[in-house]
Image 1: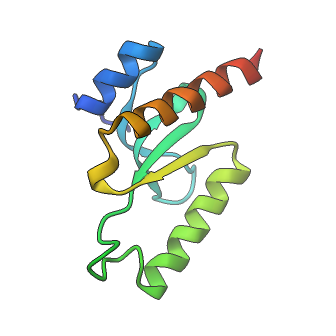
Image 2: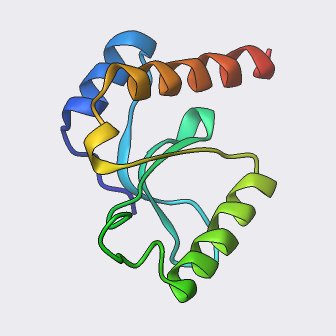
Length: 110
């Protein structure tokens, strides 16, 4: 089951696209993989890559390999995954990128 929560990112994306953003969205039917944020109706995901500069899980070999498997599976399942650092999450650059991805998915569905 997905959990819908308020976040500034969700509010901005909804304001500009009308799409709902879901936090901790489980996207794979048999694996427990989750996206930090997802717009399931458009198959757009936002992954926040913490610990990039202090040896966090995402850059250690095992974590990096698991992330590769997850992102590759997402790609072949039709997901556009946008990866950002925590400090970039609410920037104009990231919000604009997510909006572009949603609009692209919208036009490619037509």
